[in-house]
Structure formats: C-alpha cells, structure tokens
Image (cartoon, rainbow, N blue to C red; front, side):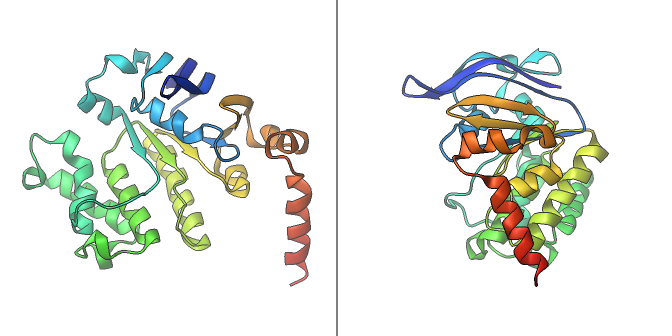
Length: 253
C-alpha cells in the first residue's frame, strides 16, 4: 500500500503541491489528471523522493524516508518525461539497467533469471527487432517503450509514470495501457500515472485524482471524478460537450 498524508513540496522554497492526501492499494491504477502546471509531475517526483518534502509517504506501512536509495528503488520506480539521451547504449543494455538494483554489479553480472525477465519484457513491448540498435537512433515512440521496459524489469512494487503514452500512436497507447493494466493485476502492484487524455483516464484507471493549483480537488472512481461541473471548473471548458460533439462526428463516418 502507498499512503500519502499532508504532503507539501516544491522548488526554491515555494510549494507547488499542497496538502496532498492520497492512497493506493496493490492491484490498482491511480491516474492523476489536471491542467498543465498544476503539480502532477512534481507530485510523482516527490513520491520518488527526488524532492525534499513535508508530510509523510509510506510504503507498506514504512516511511519512505527510512529506505536507502537502492532499497527504495526496489519499492518505487519513476518513468519521467523523456528529455534527452546521455549515453548511446543499445536497447537491450538500456533495458538491462533496470535489473541493476537486484544485482551486485553491472550488466556482466546478470543472472539467468535476470536475462529471462529482460527477454520477456522486450518481447511483450515489441522491441525484439530493435534490441541491438542504439537508443540514439530510435524514434520518440520507440524510446518511450524502451524506457518503460527498463522500468518494468526493475520489478518495483510501485511504478510512477509521467505521461507514459507520450510520443506513442493511438494503437500503441491502447496496447501499452492494456499491458500495464494486466501487469498490475497479475503482479499485484501499484501504478500511479499522470495522463492528459481523459478518455484514457476514464478507461484504464481504477481511481482518479484531479489536481488544480497544486491541490487534489476530487478523488474517487473515474466516473465520479470526471463529471462535467468539476471538469469545467478545473479546465475552464465544457469538456463533456466537446467529447460528445467529437463522438457525433465519428458516428457520421
């Protein structure tokens, strides 16, 4: 279980997220939604202990601050938004880096079990054909799947995903989220994911937290949270009407 109480964090002494209270249980996907700049990415970074914070974050009843960095990496993994690539590793080696927290050394010390986990994840994310290619030669969508594979082979209890469908076409977005939904249930793990597409939030989240100005303004089942009045207040537009008008256009095709 992940439990967050009275959480504050930010940059340069200014709080970006304020009094966040959330929890998630094994086997659940919690999606964080909200407009740009509302603090979604900051929340994920704080849960991953990349930012100083006030309040408490507990994993299975243990204070996250008490974990060593390596032990915390066995509990929580963060896949942030891709910015730039620093090392020209192959796809296989990049994915393999996710097993580092479970080994006593670097890639040469991978066990047979490690290699089986890596191979299975590469296959599931359809990366077999490019596993020997340098990641510097990949498209944004391919790179996104490589970094997700690296996160999955880390085999944490909680995965934090910041726009995991970014750079992916619609087919791969849906396939990726279907895979993650099955992974959460099969492994009895937790995903906390930031998604901008409210259609995907509605379809794939077990619970949804809606953020505005650094605060959680609504939390519950997606059909409860993503209601017209609340979305109008947070996004400043009638999203429900826009979605229905779009659907009517598709129905005419």
